[in-house]
Image 1 (tube, protein in one colour):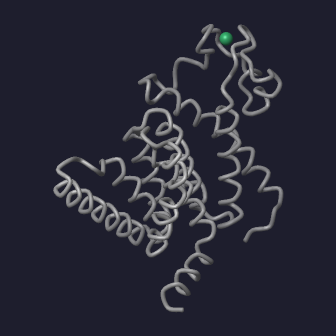
Image 2 (cartoon, helix red, strand yellow):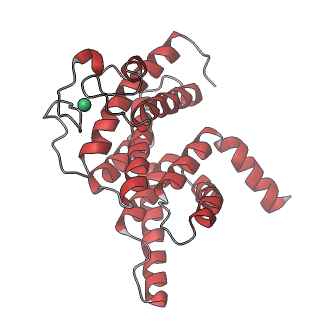
Image 3 (cartoon, protein in one colour):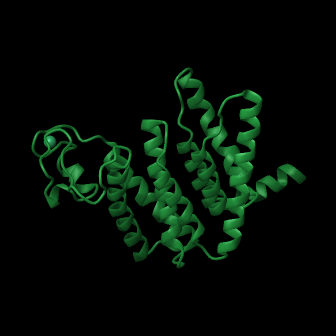
Length: 246
Ligand SMILES: [Zn+2]
């Protein structure tokens, strides 16, 4: 565990800034809008945002959560994504320290955050961000071990989906789930991957019961379980050993 220090503050501030870019990805990619141009504008009145309207987190607070021009409310999810991303980057830094692959692990979890937000709205996730999450997850030390873990998880999920869809005579697991599973395995390895899968199922129980007939997006639970498992991997692996072997 890393000490809380000046670097932590930088990591947090970078996390907020990148969270702002994530909002652009989350809003524009499913709509098929170019992520680099046009500049940010209010979706209601189309006025281009000035630089001081666009300071992550702080502008939302200064503007009281409203557009500076037309006073249209700016959804709370914008500052929340920025804050969540900053918290995720900070706890990953505190977990693994200032290692060369820190940015890649952090970016992989950021992509999972973006996928979660998109899945919540559209019940589907874009391949581009899904593959980005996987590629960032693979850029670590022991690249080939992570690649093998990812391949095993992807094949396992594909096989499971194949068998289930033959038995149930309908498509069950999508291509997107296979890629998310591969990302999880690349980040966690085995057997921690199974812990995260189990945890995500537990996390999803209550929302699934509450939702009844409506669809429940599953990526947010996979992503949250992956983060919890990544941060507490050693403790959870010990717990698994106690459960299995007493
Ligand atoms: Zn406006």
